[in-house]
Length: 350
Image 1 (cartoon, one colour):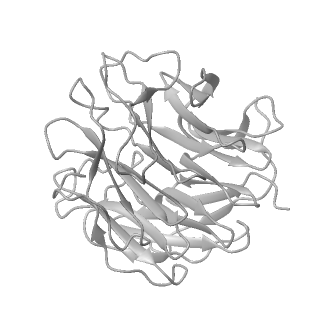
Image 2: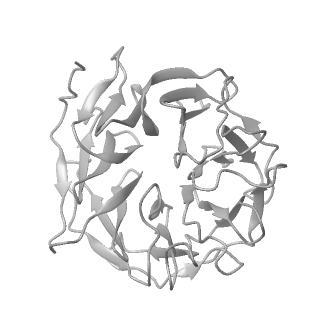
């Protein structure tokens, strides 16, 4: 039996209306706050912690514009810039994949009030698969999504330099020579300390569903050739509905986590992968002590934390965990469980 992670108590955010489930939390952090977004029905919500994860504010409704893509890694994303908090989500009028645009909202008062939404994809309904990622670094925000503007699923992206108020022309990040990438695995994105943008996705190439990585060093106008992650491969004629995560290590190297078959792997870019455990839905962040990884294992959650040679049990029940490292602060995880959002500090709060 695995040891329990008994560092700090969990915090629960529960809906105050019966029959409403909070789902798919996402996290971002800067020196002032840990910011969180999640979905419930057709609505997008925001909550924040100003005490390093000990408590979170009452959720604020960001928007409710129509059927919201939610579940299986769909749902809103969040990023923090020097002048604004930005939240994005895929919203349609009919829902169910029949339509859907990537919409972005911004707050310049710490999350108390939110702007009207703007559309990021420049071809209507191109984001209707509902799977996307968003990240920020400095004054740059980058979003990437599974795009259906033409036959076959491609990876497109766009960037904003005014805190999500306006967005660039859409850019093709990757197009598979086999005509499509994996149709229902979420992409991941990161902006590193030098301003480079990294995008990760699951490909559909040569009968396999492996993870690939590309980089832009010009602010998202052009992306490098795709690099396959890991020495192994996953022959699969199906979609596992599982993407992965990106983080920047203390030495500046990009580290990735992802699933292949029934195992979760950790792989710094350009090196061989290391198996962590059986499981799925992994996420990663780097704290002062090293890499923190969380993933689903059966009905519960497990974590890899610095100083432990084996995985530890994070929760007996829950799923779709995310993890974030606050600058010079703690590492926090958040996940959905029985209609609530649960958060927990994993790293030091000194």
